[in-house]
Length: 278
Ligand SMILES: [Zn+2]
Image (cartoon, rainbow, N blue to C red; front, side, top):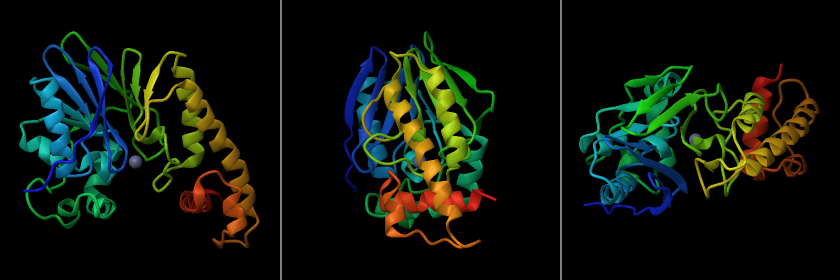
C-alpha cells in the first residue's frame, strides 16, 4: 500500500487550519463549522490526500465539502480520495471544470515524481474527479453552521478561473498569491493578473491573514510587493518582446535576468506576453 504523505498542520484561528503539503509546498485549508467542514484543495494525488484526510479527521469528524481553487493537478488530484471517503460536494469555477475536462490528463505529468500512481493512472484513487458544484462568477456563500464562507472569483489571473475563499479575516487565495517561489504563468494572463492584484489589495485589510496557494502565510504588504513586482516585470517584458523581430520568440540570457522570476518562469512569462501582445 502506498505511503500517505503527512502535511504540516498549522492552526490559524479557532476554526481554521492550513495544511502544508511538502511536495509542492501547496496549502490545503480546513474551515470547521457546526454542521460541516470545508476543505480547500485536496493535494496532488492519493498519497497527499491520504495524509490530508488523516490530519483532517484528527480535527473533525463532520461531513466535508471540497472547494478547488483552480484546476492545476497539485490542487485537485486528491479529489478522488476524498470522494471515496464520502465527500459528495466538490465546488469549483466553470473555467476550472472546463480545464479539468479538456486537459485534466495533461496535468498528470506535473505530479509524476511525487504521485507516480496518479501520473500513470494506476491503482486506487487515481481517477480525476471533476467538481459538479459550479461557483457563479458573482461568487456565493457556503454555510457550514455558525460559520459562513465567501467563495468568489476575481476574473482571469493565474488561470482562467481562480477562486478565493474568505472566512472572517482569513483569506485563501489559491495560486493568485505565491510565497517561497515565483508566480506560475503557465496558464496565466499576466496583464489581467496584475489588475486583479490591484483589486485584491483594496479588498484586504491590514490584519487580513492571507494563505497563498504555496508557501507561508503572508499579509497585505506581501501582496503589494507581488503586485509591484509584476507591474515592473510587465514593463520590462513588453520592451523585451518589442525588441524581437515580428513573430519570433528568442529571449537571451541577459533579457531573462532582467526579470524577477528565475530563468524558467521568466521564459514562460515572456512566452505568455508574446502570445497576448498584438
Ligand atoms: Zn496553480
